[in-house]
Length: 354
Image (cartoon, rainbow, N blue to C red):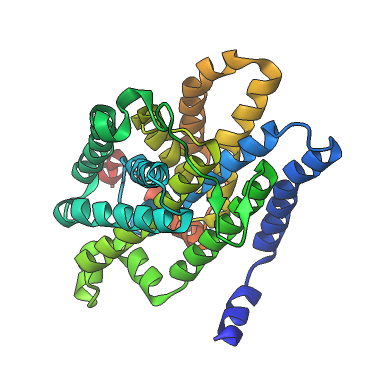
């Protein structure tokens, strides 16, 4: 088993090794800064932890959009379910490990319940259905006042959310939480890589390219779609757990439709189906604007949506495969020969002239 895993990772290209090395150095920068200033402030560490949260969400969404081709516009709802379940159980005195396990199970259960009726939908219809799921979660937590404290958020007056506590180890500082978040992100990326290069991953790509052809080849399309739909919920739940137990406060304003669009933008701009691209996309779309806010003031936030729109438009025109495309996706978008390129560039007017 170990030899097989070693062989897979030895096949990494030089590009992937360079990207991973650069990302590793970037991940160490907040720690170096924190230690250099004597641990007097944790602002950059807090921003880095939030980047890790968005990274987990983007990795989970990449399983659905990147590998399977399902446009999910309500993924932020999974984050909300995980975060609120962890917060409610922590407030009622349950241990971190128990509340985390229940939060993950609840997120997977909700994905299963929602997935059963909508998984057979395609394209715009699937996008609208998942969008409704995300909005449904936000409306429920906003109006279920006795349990969620409504728009005021959790915890309420006299209530408290615990730290991340494993019994033998409790994470009490931002540095410890950040290191833990990095480990979770690394494990999430590793799991995503293993899925991509497994038999299931190849079947998911076949579904993305042509459902009918995949079905004719013996792939159980509905079963695999539902499977990856549910598995992606683990990423969203874990992200919500880390956020809740670190910030110790959550409101319905964290489950907005805008956040779902941000996650889709991270996956698309970074590179659909690309793990390094997803990581870079999360850093650029969340980490960099937050850091610039510190230097340039909060006025930058007013132009964020306009900036995203312009970047998306430019990427679609000049680099449709994303910043760091997956090797498979890159070859899919690249014509094999000049003749094939000419045929693809032809329009209906050229064909009529023949």
